Image (cartoon, rainbow over all chains, first blue to last red; front, side):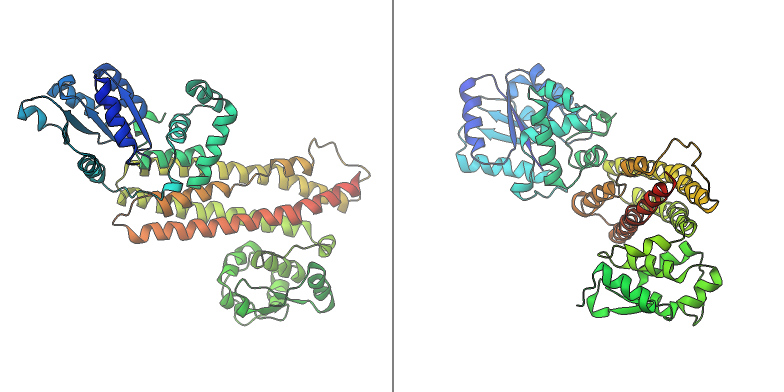
Length: 196
Length: 262
């Protein structure tokens, strides 16, 4: 199943640096960047990430809990990107800690660790995994949107939407929206509440 | 494996009332004729079991042959052999025998198939899905159940349309011809409408299969899922066959009847 990461960090150097290194790992099908908590909330709601890497100074303990509650059905992992001194108690509330002096291998190991903790999900062969764009289309599709609505929302042509749908059906061998909805819930692409 | 063309089979059928069934297991070829014991057919191929009630034949027929049982039940032996062959042999498409086929008998067969789906197959699948929901604790199970229930509604609509509109139309056509009616009373329908509307209801079963085979994570329920899949695939085969009989037998016959009347 495709995995989505959101990086919440104000410093562009750190953000882009993380993005650049993590992209090379091929662990995620989609990576999004945000710079403040409000944008992070919004991004979690929209993209249903598996993991968020956040600067601990952006979120206090309460904010951390409320981020985890945004998508009730899905266990959201939150890692701290630490490059200044923080109280241990605060840092312990994160699922993983990434240090500024971690090297590439160590960072990969930490990320792999968190992803593997997500229970009961076997990674399909890469050629069968949905692309980030296909995931976007699938998510909107199972919310009951038409091809036209999806095309407007994602700023792509209906023709492209249809071709994404074709690929999704081919990869998953599921044709109907009702069947895709079950798949999306199974793989935590969407929560039960979001299905109308 | 001997491969009979359509014509060969029909010729054969006309000559001596018997033909070879290309059993999907080709080592297991079997000649079915009017003189074959019905019990032997059922013993050889379990798929023939579900056909019996469609001819209103009940188990317990002893050593009687196909011909004897058919006579007793007022079924044309040729019709019985034709349906058995279509059902058990994927590559068999009837052609020449259609002209002599008894329309009422065909409609009764199709309606009885529907009854089997509605009274036996679907309720059993429903109890299995119910059981699955109890055993497999996953939020997606509820959605699967919803999907299944929607699907059943579609199947029932499909069957009801055929029972209430398409089949009575063909029955009326056949009745008019029997009574030698000069012209057909104005019924605003033709078999072309049915042909167009005849969508594949078995398609969604494939989605259910994919979900259960590939995507539901392993759980403690080893057997329930296998039971469901067994039933689904069985149902799928049956529906595909049923659609083939409608497309390859019912529709051509209705077209022939329409031509006679116009």
